[in-house]
Length: 231
Image (cartoon, rainbow, N blue to C red; front, side, top):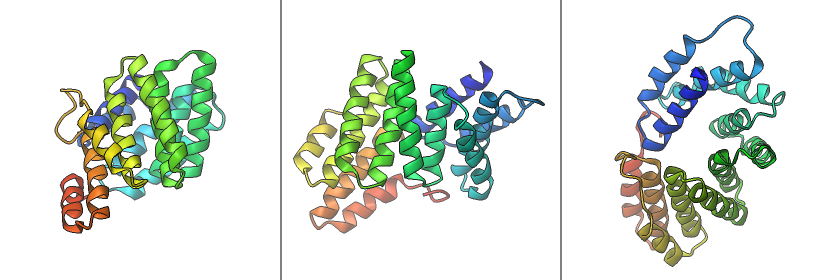
């Protein structure tokens, strides 16, 4: 339970943009290591060792534990383990692996009735599809994730999906749809100033700026959400 609570804490830090908290979470996770850990616990702890390092720019420290988290997931059918492995694949820039693992997570969530895991699993899938240039598939995954988030009362992930849909609309040249999605976007009040939906909104608007011949405006928007240490 303690390890899963730390996983939830990393999700909260990711959504709110409070990445500095991740190192504290990693230290707490390291203290939970013990000999002969079950595979599922080992996988989660490897994820918690690698994930925070990404957000401090220490990529060398991040790579090996994230790779282990992905490899161990091949022996697991647990929804949380598969979502973590899919997210780790995204961080390792392996979008194909992320697609495969996120799809497995979605199937497992449907099969077990663990519907509260669907919004995050579908978000990871949509991001991987975006990275592979599968824009229509990414939009479909986002739409499904948006519905699942609203159905399960997860306003944070609903905002993520809506903002990501705006990015996809902008990339596909549907700037009216992009602006409408952003006008109707409701960011949870406790999300924090550098929240993920806010960052995605800036990205969407930067794409429309660039397409409209305003590269300086696009650069300013992207610069406002960039973290110097990690991008």
